Length: 198
Image 1 (spheres, rainbow, N blue to C red):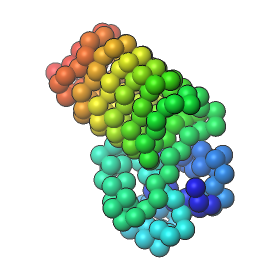
Image 2: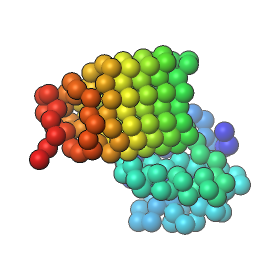
Image 3: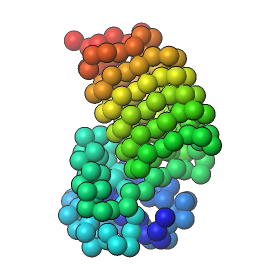
Image 4: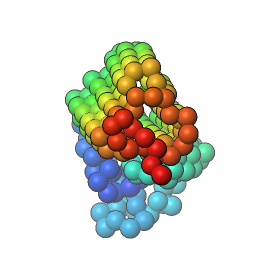
């Protein structure tokens, strides 16, 4: 970990990630953003910081997050992983680069969480889950034990995925939805039990 972190994205997600970075001990926090007034520069200014800073992409859109993190990695950037000190993460959990684990989140033993994910405030990922890359598990969502979530999905606020299921890549699970069967077709799923939106 370096003393400086450059956060790509100066919106709400960026400010939350900056707070985590501060609590983790980063002494200097800069934003790069193409439109925000509080940014130190544009996203394409990142090369000037490659030698002396870690980087983190704090943008809610998973496909944009993937594109920017990949660009940074291909150009030699050191990608941070941000874990709030008030998150509970079991000792054996594996967490990939560029993932943020917010305050109050819980990740239980045997779980693995891939790259570029957002495990948002008070979300929980239970034992032996497999979370792919560039997902967003939103505020208060509950992922029960032994669930597999594939890449590029969004699990909405307060949604629940019950145990032993899988959700294929590219799905959006609506806020408050309850997934009671494995999902094998990309799409948007709403309701209790969750059904594919037409």
